[in-house]
Length: 190
Length: 190
DNA sequence: GGTCAATGTTGACAATGCATACATGGTGCT
DNA sequence: AGCACCATGTATGCATTGTCAACATTGACC
Image 1: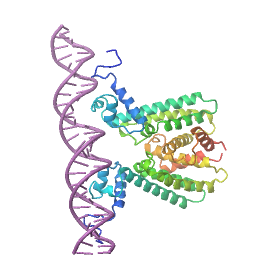
Image 2 (image 1 turned 90 degrees about the vertical axis):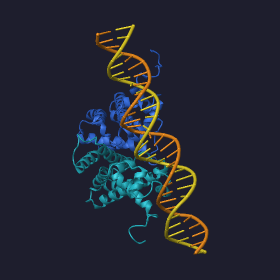
Image 3 (image 1 turned 120 degrees about the vertical axis):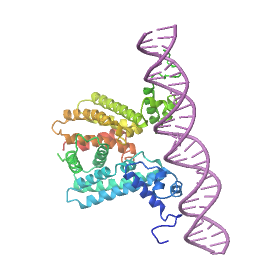
Image 4 (image 1 turned 45 degrees about the vertical axis):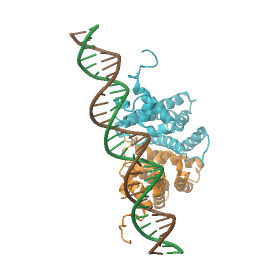
């Protein structure tokens, strides 16, 4: 039973495999049916219910995981950025993540899952914190709660417009240029 | 047959009633099934197919209609605003529309309906134009394509964050204050 | 070794999107 | 007037989906 293949019953670590399967389906652009997820995990349609009370709970779990990943991506970009370019790098990472995982991203910030009971809100708060910190460091003079909300809105909105393809004609640029110019313009000190 | 009630067959103007029915369902927060829409319009489940090739086409039509409504709301606010406050008023109208019709709004800018063939893109372009014009008038010195993209992103993102309830703790304000402070902060000339 | 709870399975049901075949009745031609 | 046509609506059926209820399997613990 230390094999990679479990006998048949007792998959080993379903719960996790279900998340992976869902992510896989999302990644290839389909919105996942519970049954498809089960199929993909090599398990009967009802099996997921042993781990999540209903489909929405699974999707919420996936969304949370997506937010974690976004958080990490943003953190990494923030940490790796040369001095003074943290916010730019962070924003680019945010938009790029959205562009790379459009369906997942929409799920993450989608029809506010009521079951989440603030979990999603709390998770996205961690993302916001990174931005807040970077703002406080790079623009201490301008810093304010409004600036934080503004920056988040700006980056978030940009990400969504990109996903929706609504900037196609205006800006078919590589993301980096688009993000940098937009942020610079909006935030230029004067 | 000039009554308000049509006999039974030949509803009169289905196509339109279907849009209305869908909007009604959306307004009360449900995502509408084709059958529910048909029921709501007092017609058999297959009737809608005489007017829209499939569900997605109907939803796209509804989305287009929503964008028109948004456009009008934004135009009205822009026109009615006192001098120098056009952008603020316009942004507020945008966010308020989203907050008032959250499900519809998500549908409008939702999973980029492929069938739309750019129709949605074109429609949202009309909204962008209003903002563009107002920017050119109120901030001719700072005007640039990037500023336009930035403003749109900012307002759009703010609208979505509000819908998602992600600003709840940070800003339980009446919308007006939130929008005004955020925009002012982001756009202050120095 | 025997019991139990965790985990997975089977079968069924209602709702949904859609395909196919049919009904109805207003419109225009003669 | 009479009649055929065709846009519009209906009826029926199928595959898929989310979920419930009842059953099967198996590893862990006494």
